[in-house]
Image (cartoon, rainbow, N blue to C red; front, side, top):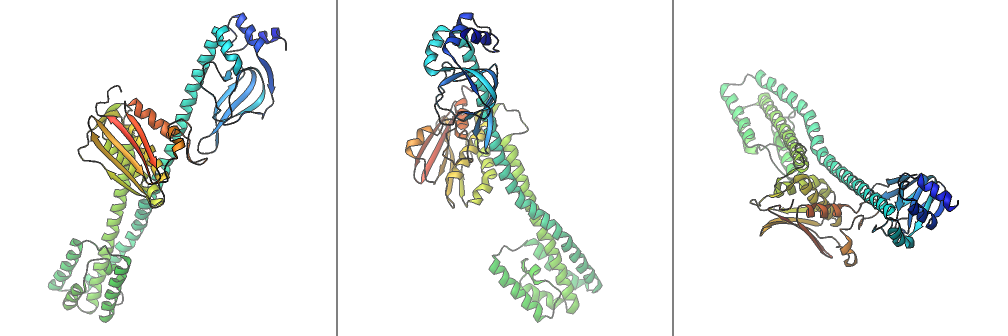
Length: 465
């Protein structure tokens, strides 16, 4: 294609078509017309980006691995300008760029860009505008994907945490029906025994005593020994239809059993013990259901507090203590999987800061989640908060292998990650840094083998927010 034909094509280009003819001519004279077949890999991750691409037709797309396989993050079609744009700091490709349809484009190389900016003012302005739009879209997509990944982690952890109490409540609710039926049957047997007023009073007093003393909390071995002792007592008194395991879970003692045996005889003693055991079993199950429901309620409250889903994301007084407690509660399941002990130390009188609650909580989620990833099995993560002068200082410390000294300066860079492929996007700490800076704060990191500490400093006043 001749220079004149290239100029004609450029005049019909969506982005550059309206620039002066002399600038179009300069671009046509210095560019190289290329055709790319579908499937061609025109940019590899980690390679130097050395060319500006003015697309006449076709389609290209850039893919990145952001934690869950390759994902399309950018796409360009005929009429777009991409690649190395004037004044761009882009040097290394962050992903893979693939030709998806037969593409024709005019290519200018890095060495031509200084002259382009000198000779083609309007073309340069358009390309700089395209560069800022590209950066804005790319950052927006990156942050969105990181937030989705964080949401996935949160949902996974929450599902794990909710599953245990929910399963326990379902199981105990099913057992409760049988326990109530057994207690009702025993109550009918007690009524049929025609006990005297004194005997009924004695039975009711023992029942009230067990209710008041709630339930036992014994180890498996101690509970087995207790069950065996009660089974022997029942055998000695020729009682075979009272489950010793139900009585063993109460606080009843052999002395109390002897007391009942003196007041009741034969079938009436067995009926009374079944009534006591059935009632104790039902109360124990109800207690477990209540505990499971309380745990579920606490988890839901933690999610609500963490996300502030009932409030608009506006700046307000932020309770750092509550945010840290909610975050630790949501990550407790992950800690349990690795047997990691999380220690949270926050003074009750820690002052509030001024900021956006959801964003502040995202700082703690990223830092504590990273600490759990870094800590070894049966390791430790310490989270401490305190007031120091006019600031609140939060420290997150893990006892993992540490961050190598040669990469410590890069950990806050976008897309840099020490995690294996598919495990991290390299955006978590970049998001943390951005949020801290937007709240007029600072974040620092110190690391050595066995101890890595992230220190976040947020001003109490929130000036500049």
